[in-house]
Image (cartoon, rainbow, N blue to C red; front, side, top):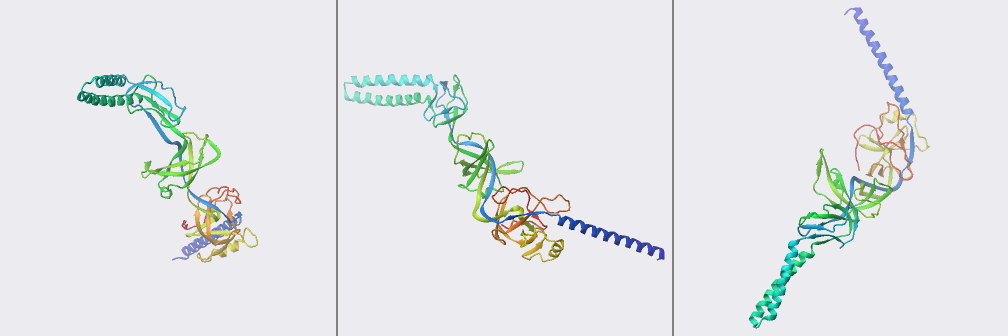
Length: 392
C-alpha cells in the first residue's frame, strides 16, 4: 500500500474521530441543558378516600311502564288523554264499544228472565228442578257477557305519564293491542352500556354517581339493579346493558335525558394517596420523587449523572428533583393512586411541569382533578423507560 493511500485513510479516521467527539459533547451539552431546565412542583401525600369506578352513558327511563290494552275489538270512544298528560291509577282512559258484546248481554238477560218465569210456573218438582238448572246456567252466561261489557271501559293500571298514544277516537281497536302507554315517573332508572373490559367489575347493589347533561351542578345517587348477561356488538366493540336506579330522583329529571354514570366498583377510606402524575414507572417498578430534606427542588447535573450508574434495584436514587424512592401502590383511578409503602403521610413528592423542549422524553397525560390539597395543575404519569406495570 503506497504512502498516499495511507495518508488518506489516516485523514478520514481523524475527521471521523473529530466529528464524533464534537457530536458527543454537543449532545451532552443539550442533555445537560434540558435536564437543568426541568421544573417541578411539590404536593404532600395525604390521607383521603379513593374510589375506583366504571363509567357508562345512557338515557333515563321509567322503572315501570304499563300499556292500556283493548280487551275486545271495537270502536274507540272517549279517548281524551294525550302524550305528556299525567293520569292516576284507576282513571278511565277510553271506551271500546262492541255491538256484538252488547247484543250478547241483552240475549242472556232475556234468557234469564224467561228461565225465572219457568221456575215460578212449574207445577211439579221435577219440572221446577229442571227450570232452576237452566236458570243457573243462563245466569252464568249473563255474568260472563256483563264482564265483557264492563271490560270495554279501559282504566289506567298505574299512575304516571302518558308516553305513547297509538289510536284516536273513532279508530277500530284490536283486542290485545295497546291504545296508550303509561310510565311511572315516581321511580326512574338509567339504562346504560358498559364496555366488556369493565363488566366483570360491576355487581348488583353497587352504588353509583349520576350526572345529567341537561342538569348542571348536581350529582344524583344510584344503585345497580340489573346486569345483562348478553352483550351487544357494534363495530367490533361489545357492551353490556346495565340498569341503575336513580335513588333520589326529582322533577328536574325527564324521561329520555342523557346521563353519565360512574359505578363505584371498589373504594377505600382514609387511604394514603398522591396524584397519578407523581408516579414514575421504570423497568417494571414504581417510584416517586421525594423532595430533598433541604427543600431543594433540583439537584445538580453531576448528582443526576452519578445516580444513573447505580443499580436499578436500589430502593431510592438521587435525581435532579430530590430522591427517587421506590413505592408500592394499591387502588388507582384516573386521578389518584394509593401508596401502600415507600413514603409517609405529609412527605412531599415532586411532579414535573409540562416541558416545551423536544429533548425531554417524559410524558404527560392530562390533569388530575380537584381533590383538596392537590390543586388543579395539569400533568401526567412520568415514564422513565422500560415497560409499564400495573402493580396494583
